[in-house]
Amino acid sequence: MLPYLAKKLAQMLPVAFFVTIIVFALTNLLPGDPTVTILGEQASPEQRAAVRVEYGLDQPAPVRYVTWLARVAQGDFGRSLRTREDVGAMLAARIPVTLELGFLSILIAVAIGMPAGILAARFRGSLIDVAASLIAMSSVAVPYFWMGVLLIMLFSLKLGWLPPSGHIRFLDDPGGNLRLMVMPALTIGTAFAALVMRQTRASMLQVLSMDYIRTARAKGLSERLVLIRHALRNALIPIVTVIGLQIGALLGGAVVTETVFALPGLGRMLVDGIFQRDFPVIQGAILFIVIAVFAVNLLTDLLYRAFDPRVKA
Image (cartoon, rainbow, N blue to C red; front, side, top):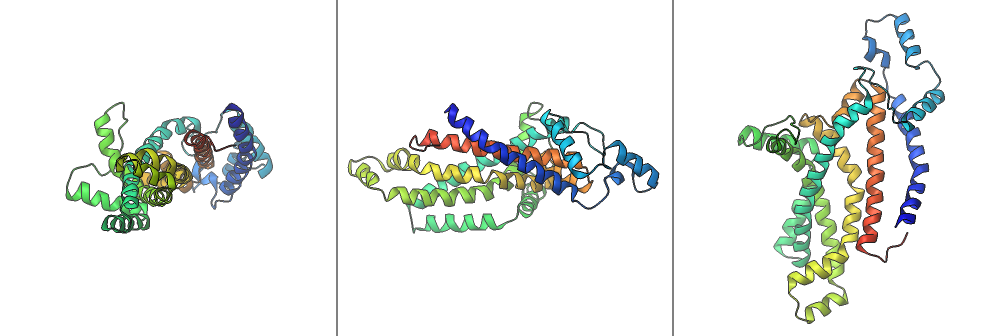
């Protein structure tokens, strides 16, 4: 396993380097003057020129990229142009919120999508299969922001069961934290559950047509045992693939969802940074998202080998 892990990490390094170039280039292509973020619109040209020199904004782009990359390699993401707060500290404060949202969303997606997919495959062509497929297609078609607004209108304004927005640290108040995180997690989790359901159904249908499934049934094993122990285990690899590949989309959904529900997470930090032309904040947030996607893809590869030893590097 260690040689396999080392090989995967070595393959990711050139890609990571190329990604840093893209992140830096796209950030600097954003319209607007970052000195406005620092000084405001009333500053004189002389003040703006002094700030550009102070922050190195007067240097050519390649020089600024090398300087930024060298600092990032040392764990220094710079300081916010607007608040002067250390970007690394901002990431440390925001990442736990996004990780919790992502974990709860995946939990909801798996808890809904996998059982629904198994039932749809087991009763192929039945009313259960048709209903599950229609609900899945409808969930995928609804944008995150619209789903979030609908949930707020239903559970907060209409029923009064849940607070509409805000955040409380889990360690400070577990119950209050979960009450605030339920709707954001449902917003992302329902769309994610639809993809999990469709992939689970397709994988299970393929596995259920195999000879060893017919043999297991012929031996008199219960249908539940056949589905869970024999069919689902062998159908997991495509399901894990979909979950791994959709992590990037999940993080993209977090950008919108955290804004709708006023969650102080990484997604909202990125949106605020873009609106304020705060380059260090934007670069730090995007770079962490990319690293997270790399890490999840690596974990997915390792899970392949855990679920099926026949999978080789």
